[in-house]
Amino acid sequence: MEKKKLLIFNGSPREGNTVEALKALREGLKDHPELEVREIKAADVNIIPCTGCDVCMSSGDCIYEDESYDTNRAILEADFILFATPVYWWGITSQLKLVIDKFYACHEIFKKNPKKIGTIVIGEAGLYDPQYEIIEKQFWCIADYLNWTKVFSKSYSANKPTDLSEQADSLEEIRRLAVVIAEAVAD
Ligand SMILES: Cc1cc2nc3c(=O)[nH]c(=O)nc-3n(C[C@H](O)[C@H](O)[C@H](O)COP(=O)(O)O)c2cc1C
Image 1 (cartoon, rainbow, N blue to C red):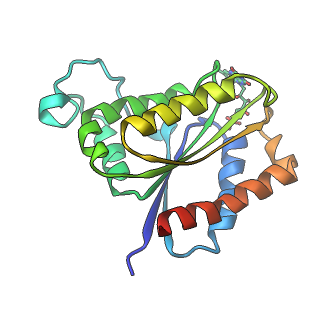
Image 2: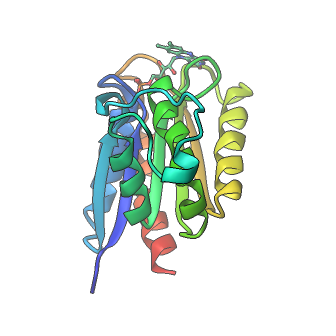
């Protein structure tokens, strides 16, 4: 049987809490060999910011020779997309936003290829802060627009790079997301 594909976007440029969260998820994923996992660190991808030239609307590809063709291709091939990002100024990181802006070139194709998505958002502020809801809404609006299914959105409060690794309950919850993802793509 062909494996289902999980694509993870890591929006953090550093070795910190997002990486810790994704390590926990990968522990959980060990019990799900039916999933093929690909992780893309947004900071390592060469993407020139979208200039809104609209050429991609007719060509289907960005005029700039960057790696957005590969990130958009990875989206098309995936069954489940996990966006994991720190909070930067009440929003997602610019590294991840660069990747998402380039969805523009493929949004009509994306709409015809339903995906399931989840989000993990990590900020310094406590979970009372509106930033988590703001980011969740942004992803949910993107998903609605693209006809994608929202499966989960999880938020955690952690600041120093080692903070999340000291939160046993959060790590356990993230480990268990592997089951949620596996069940979502099995539908
Ligand atoms: C440029 C910048 C902006 C930030 N803005 C916020 C913010 O608006 N709200 C917040 O709670 N934390 C903010 N933070 C803190 C990070 O979200 C926090 O340290 C997070 O744990 C970083 O995740 P990482 O370790 O995976 O990189 C900011 C950090 C940086 C570097």
